[in-house]
Image (tube, rainbow over all chains, first blue to last red; front, side, top):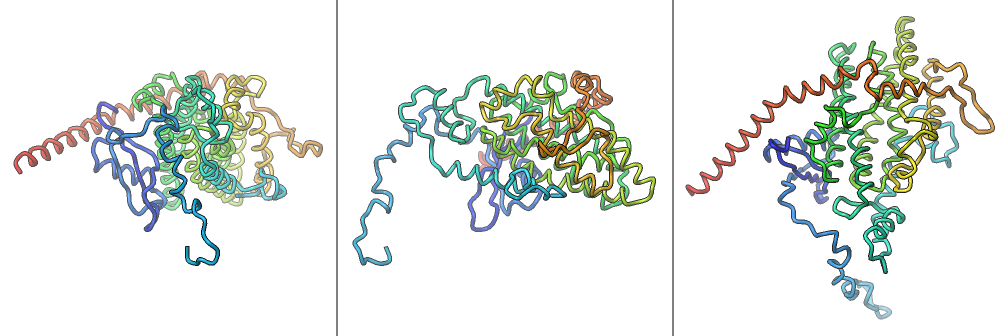
Length: 94
Length: 356
């Protein structure tokens, strides 16, 4: 099958107002067939109102080998979280 | 779920299977929300892997994992995927002869679900670095197995009911704990599968219930199906714990959560009351409630027969694989045509871009 078809990652929007979520992958020769296959494989019970299919080869992923170091820069910036700030008593709507 | 409401509600085994799946899904989300496992001072990849598993978090495709863990998962997920695909055959056998349009439509939907389950699982196996081609090949040339149960024939329409009630029922008991498996893609696939299997089990139960309350001939047909499928269904849980080769390590890795014998017992306890509602007999003269254990004593399936069927000597082994192989071979031109069409379209788009 790989000689005929590539791997696609499938993302489904379950309902309006929610973002597309990765649900799995499948093989298909082109985008159109991938979309139809995705409908048959991943939304047989009305699980979605919108589907994205993305060639798996087109995805660039962060490497798990770096473990947490890749995300470390975020660790020492606690001031990005609202809880960092002390709210003076009596100040409303913050 | 039919009938297992008689267990006290605080006993997790007394919950309906769907509730147990929902619990597993909740646990998955909660574990994900609990943050990363504490990896301070953990430098070794293996220690990190162990910390993730110990924290009930999921191992994901690109994480480092022990080679044996990867191999065990590939073997198990592949066998599971193959079972779904081969499992389409015994039931598909009755699509053209279903007794009504309604039953036919339901059975079609069910067999289509089995194909879907196979595909979720193949996709999960592929995240471990094995290709779909290799998986298909290993099924066809016998290097990988599928559940021995699908090597038994479906002789009557009632068999479709017995498969739904007993075979899918046993599969669910086996699979609900897999929703908590430590490998993320497998756990997520199993949650989907289990939710859908619940429909399968109920449709089978309904077929048997209808037959059991029909004419004497229909009733006899239902009983005959249960007689033939009972022991092979018990054998689906695998060899007894004393002979099970893969169990201990799989438990440590949290791939497997309960032993074969524990799951088999759980299944028997569930079925007895369901059989009473059906007014059908479980073909075991030694079936008896043990008040001390709060469980049923039962006759073990014939494990020599199980081994024979696994080795390829069941009633339908050769036919199942031959069908699978010819379906794959006969589909070759469709795959080739789709690929040619895709290539042609690609070229057309490129030419249009050049012209523009």
